[in-house]
Image 1 (cartoon, rainbow, N blue to C red):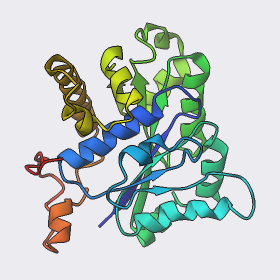
Image 2 (cartoon, helix red, strand yellow; image 1 turned 45 degrees about the vertical axis):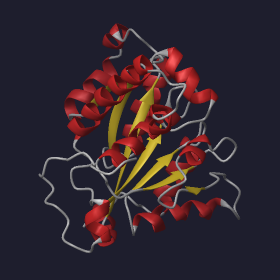
Image 3 (cartoon, rainbow, N blue to C red; image 1 turned 45 degrees about the horizontal axis):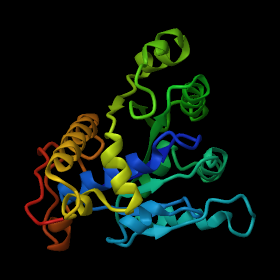
Length: 262
């Protein structure tokens, strides 16, 4: 069995990494998929605080020599379960150094460890944000799986991307998946963020009105479909199956929503 480390990256602040991480978590919860959350945003661990279940952990990503190897908890956790990692801004160099020093993406080590790594790279539409994605992909020479996530909650018009020949060539040559992450309306987002709720907590909140529930439901369902289409969760163990110690469903089995309340 291969466990996957899902790095939610983007380098810059304000591109939607925390929001997208929360959607990935709720996607896993909907289908009862096995996962552990690791929040690397030590100064503002809002994702870990909203989703403390399933052994959620907090780790500081720092270049300090004594604390640098604390990042190993990501890999050690992935030996047991798939991992979703919310990366803070300006952690690009640190996480790349960690991957490089142990050569975690080499084919031989992947086979030995049974651990694969991918990046869900959030982009806010600016030129430097797009170029950071190109740099990230080229840095690992295609050995690290990347998903290009265009955040329509940050940038509503992506027509200017046609002028960035480097990324268009890269996407076409390597068949890089693109996820057009939809916008959650400001009213619902403000309510959820002000009260620091998970999406499911918001759905059950008495002040979260029916029309707001519908807007959130529409946003989540659209996001789930996009994530599922990428296919990186098709081989993820089911939590209920794993806990009962029965066989994991085959990778090509269609994901089925959880029938247990979240």
